[in-house]
Amino acid sequence: MRELFHHFINALSADEIAHLKEVGAAATAQEGTVFSTAPDASALRRSTIGWVTDEDVKSLLWSFVSRANEASFDVDVTPQADVQFTSYFASEYGHYDWHHDIYWNEQGPLDRKLSVTIPLSDPASYEGGAFEFDEVKTTADFAALGSVLVFPSYLRHRVSPVTKGVRHSLVAWFSGPRWR
Image (cartoon, rainbow, N blue to C red; front, side, top):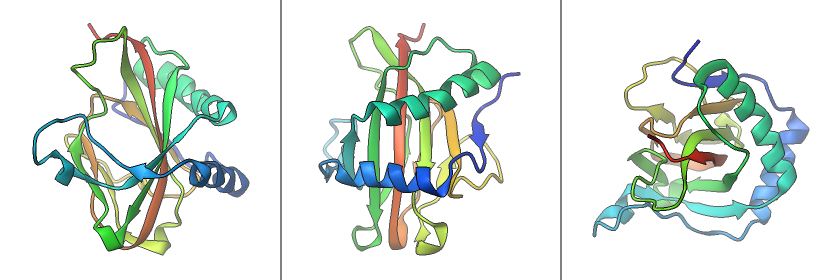
């Protein structure tokens, strides 16, 4: 059955969450960017990111993506992924405004097909920072530790401003042949 997103609840153990956070925190931090070249595009996102290259992490994420794809999406996707550890700091009004994860101007042979979001901060340790879809109405708790959210990369979504504390997450984009 086709679905707009696939949410695995209580999918990760405390040890797995700690490991993902450790691997992510070890990645070299840099300012988060956006695809747009518009002069005011930097206002769309305030976060730090680090690229995660660990193959075990990619394999773990692929296990969720492949199951979600089989159950909910049925798109042509491969285990090839970009993985990013993202931090949103209240001191910087961290957020990522409405966007989709596909870079429509990409000229290569692959497009992002399925996106993954894994919260790595206890929701009690920060305020704000809600993950929200634009056109999908749901009461799902996407901030719950241990959850894994998989959705088509073309769905518009955002992370609302963090107003207290720090929100960490692991996000990934799995690619496949260009959309057509």
